[in-house]
Amino acid sequence: MSPTIPRALPEHDTPPVSRPLRVIVMGTPDFAVHTLQAVHGAGHEIVAVYSRAPAPAGRGMALRLSPVHKAAEALGLTVLTPPTLRMPEEAERFAAFKADVAVVVAYGMILPKAILDAPRLACLNLHASLLPRWRGAAPIQRAIMSGDRETGIAVMRMAEGLDTGPVGIVETVAIGPDMTAGELHDVLAVRGAELMVKALAALAQNRLVFAEQSEQGVLYARKIGNEDSRIDWSQPAAQVHDLIRGLSPFPGAYAMVDFGKGPERVKILQSACVVASGEAGALLDTQLTVACGQGAVRLLTLQRAGSKPLSAADFLRGMPLAPPQRFM
Image (cartoon, rainbow, N blue to C red; front, top):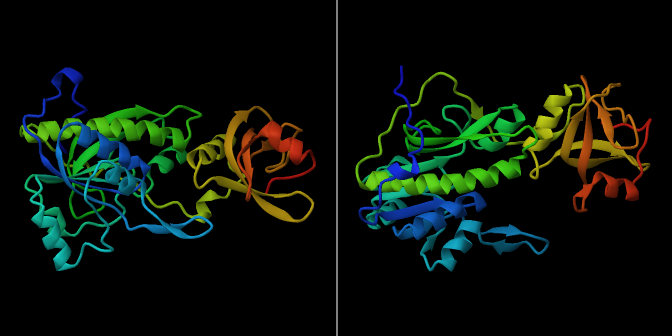
């Protein structure tokens, strides 16, 4: 049996920072910005920040810096965006920073062994699940899509496998019945930043104890694809509701609707389960209640292609829908 993974340290047990650590922070999206700022605010010496390279975005396809890149520059930190870390010269440059620890949060690139072995103490990864459940790329979305009632945030020591490293501390977070992926993302980003600061303080005092993950209960949170996003109205209402909130606000669960010019894609961003029945996909009333395989859901927020999200009432003002129309 694997050792019990320690839960987050209570506030009064959080070890003070005995000395600043030399830290490399590696991250890319908004989720990682909170941790970057928290580690910087805790007084550690961030010797470098690694992020994914600027990518074309917007109508003009101009190169856009990642959220972490922009946040790091605002703090006056050195930012590196190598296309790969597998070249020997990149490993040498990484090792030359003589970091005590690397903090990795949604970086988006596999770290080779030479990088994992370079920091004096460890490479620590912040992962948004209760490991070993939901290893992989989309743990927040997959937890909600599966109807989980709780998830968490974990600090683990990185290994070469996919999210297989031993866990130091973890904090459990409840998932409300109507909570969206966006809302859970924001909660976990803040909690995760706080947890990583605690982990670094404990690591500095040699008090961060790691426990191997159990081999029982392993689930993989594979990346969300287009095939995951289309609503299957033959499913029970609870599962349809979980899919909608699990993909809100991005990429958005969708259905096809014919407004008179052929079927077009409409994103459904918010819903509620209601007591009603009918043929799956059928519109049951003028309040956007749609029948499912069992029960029904009422659509609360929708978005047509090229438009902004609208409440059901505003959506219906511009595009009246009524039985016998269907969502496909």
